[in-house]
Image (tube, rainbow over all chains, first blue to last red; front, side, top):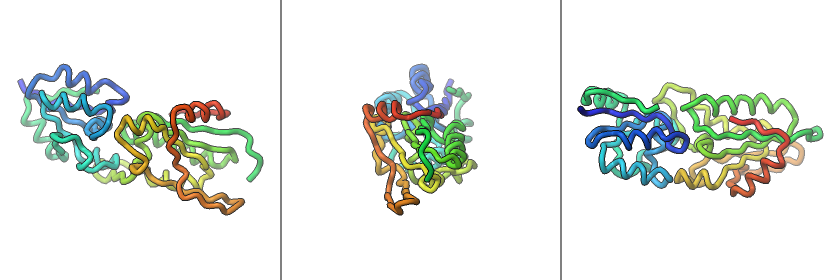
Length: 102
Length: 136
């Protein structure tokens, strides 16, 4: 069963992303939203965690949340894909279910 | 300016938008400007994200309060500190942050940017020196 996981917490404040990546099955998708988008930025101490996740799952980031926080797409870790709200809906429909990591 | 009574420090540790802390802190700082105190703001941990320039919240339907940081100098906020380790851990440098100008009303001295990146030892000193620390 394919799952879309959402993570809305900063990786520096909570372990939501870490747990998500630990328990997400290979081939599932992880969408970073709200404060979760900070994990998508290159050069941070969370980069190795995200990069190891990219070996197993697809990682997406919600563009409007990234832009709100002052970051452009050129700051992202390679391999992370940006989606807008319509893309969020597409991801939700493409997967069997959605699992939120709060 | 009247005699300084106390040193107020506002300690900011949360990212903007995800929670209400950043905005609430800003509101209290602006209200507190009415009291003639020596005010400093300290940004550590995810709080450093509050000062990131180029924030554009049009896409998320929330108020963009980041331009307000650039006006803090007009509200008698004289010192703004950013923890260097917190910046580095997030892959950020001072170039990613807004500049905040300050003009001393008495001496007319102008400072282009009062945002100062400091090391942990200096953060310790500054916290010790403060009479009151407000946490957000």
